Length: 315
Image 1: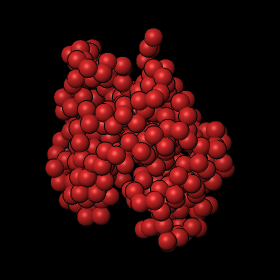
Image 2: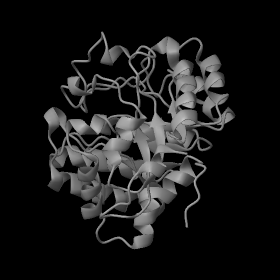
Image 3: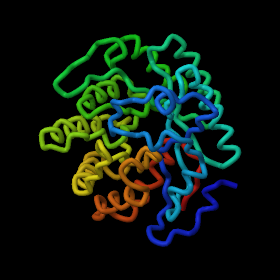
Image 4: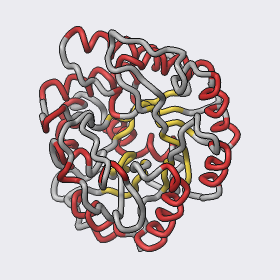
């Protein structure tokens, strides 16, 4: 029996939800450096000390109570570099005990010496679907690091990145908005690797100038048939939850990618720095209020089931 089966019947919004992006961690079961002894003062959302504690399946289910969540995708959660496969093995145990997450996305750095071995280790898990790995990026839109070691133009990075296709894995593309056009070039170069843009393309600069750069990147990515987008993590630094601009970026991203290429993600527990699960769903519903019930069903569940090849059957 899955913990999802213990959720009470929803009182309001009742469409089935597949959460395509959340994290779990047990700080006593492994090393999570940025949540333990290497606090990241440059974290993109600011102060995150309130989530530097265990976050386990019971915590997750508590946070989604009130909604019909029927499945989830675990995204790598910052486990120590020498414990990448250990995170996968731990999550397999969690799945056996609690019935969640349904599938997972692991981590490897595409320039680490044992990249091929780590990918093979992940691939042994029947729950593994892909990799989230951040390339080296610049500090802002006015700076370029193109071609530097670890960037998306680095031959070493690209050779190991190509191994995803061998293992039938996708790439969760977590890059800042000013690198999205470069992400599209990667997508064109590797058409056999499915890719999903994380966190709505991270439109952290909501000025008109910033949104022009973000929109240009999304349009380039939407031209690549192997790319979809995850509408998730709309929070801004210092706990800011700007509903009008959140609605705008969700609506625009959905229009650029279309009904079959948008998927819902909560980013729990990181998203609790800004809002709760209900707040996330409310923004999505406001942004997509003109969409058909069929589009909403695709966005909230069916598209994620298809992309992550999840063992979930829905009407």
